[in-house]
Every structure is written in C-alpha cells, then in structure tokens.
Image 1 (cartoon, rainbow, N blue to C red):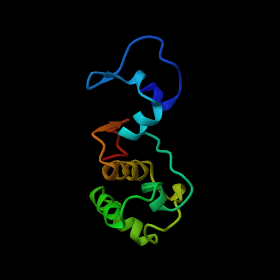
Image 2 (tube, one colour; image 1 turned 180 degrees about the horizontal axis):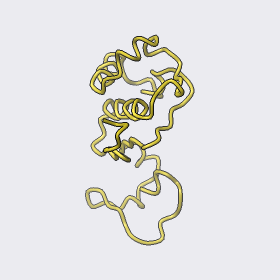
Image 3 (cartoon, helix red, strand yellow; image 1 turned 90 degrees about the vertical axis):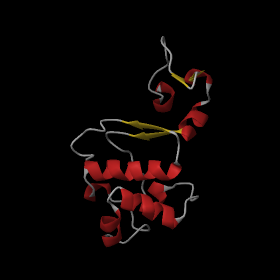
Length: 123
C-alpha cells in the first residue's frame, strides 16, 4: 500500500490482493480500485459535491443517498447543500471521516481501507 501514499519504496515484503503483487500495478490503477478513509481526511477546496465526486460522474441522488447513509445529509442540507463550499474548520474530525466514507460508498470499489476505524470520531 506504500504505492498509494508514495511515502517510501518497498525494500522487502510483499502485499498481494487476489494473488497479485501490488508492486506490479501502476499506482494510478491501484488508487482507482482501492478506497481509503484516512484518520485525518484530506479534503479539497471547492464544493461538497466536488469533494464527494471530483470527476463529476456521480448523480446528486447517489451523493445524497451516501450522505444520508452516514448521517451527514441533514447537516449539509442546513449549510446550503451539495454546492456549498467545503469549510473544513466547521467540520469535526469524525464528520470529515464520514464524508470520506460516503465518498467511498459511491465509488463502489471492492476494497476499503479504514485508518482508525474504531476511533471515537468515526462512530
């Protein structure tokens, strides 16, 4: 998974998914197939819609469905909806993680990595 983060080169060991060594997969391909919900989520300047779906390929209905599932839709609706600018200072750490979880839900990848999933912020 070091390829995902580009923190360092792998010097020993191996990570395989379905028998495939991830070191043999292009980083871009690996990133597009794995969802990650980090402990300290990185959110981009722009709207909530953009943070949910930077490629603008997901319908509003799907975005809203995922946000409802994680319990954020009411708060987002109260702040102006999907087009509201992302103000990370107004969001708790748990809310930012939940937004990333909602984003992962709409991508529908088969692999989801959760960093500190049992943290008090997430649940």
